[in-house]
Amino acid sequence: MLVEIYSSDECIYCVNLKEWLDNKNIQYKEKNVSNKKLLEDLKNLGGIGIPFTVIKNGDQTHKVAGLNYKKLQKYLEID
Image (cartoon, rainbow, N blue to C red):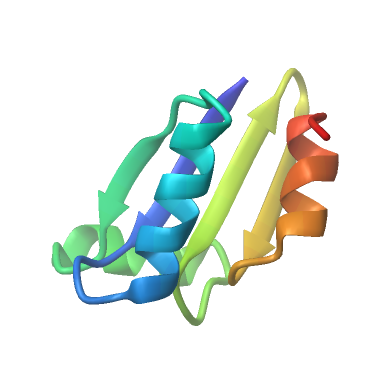
C-alpha cells in the first residue's frame, strides 16, 4: 500500500492528519504543495484543497479530500 499526502507546513489539518497516521504506524510520503510542480500534480488529480490523500492499494486508487477519518479508515483498512 502506498499513501501520499499533499499538504503544506501551514495547514493545521495536514499536521493533524500526519500525526494521526503516525499514531496508527502508517507510512506515507508527504508532498508539500509549496513546490509548484507538486501543486500542479495535486490539481491534475482533481484536488482543490489540502490535505489531499491518495491511497494506492493493488490496482485500486482512492482519493480522500480533507481530514475525513471515516474514509481514511475504510481505504486504509484500519479501525
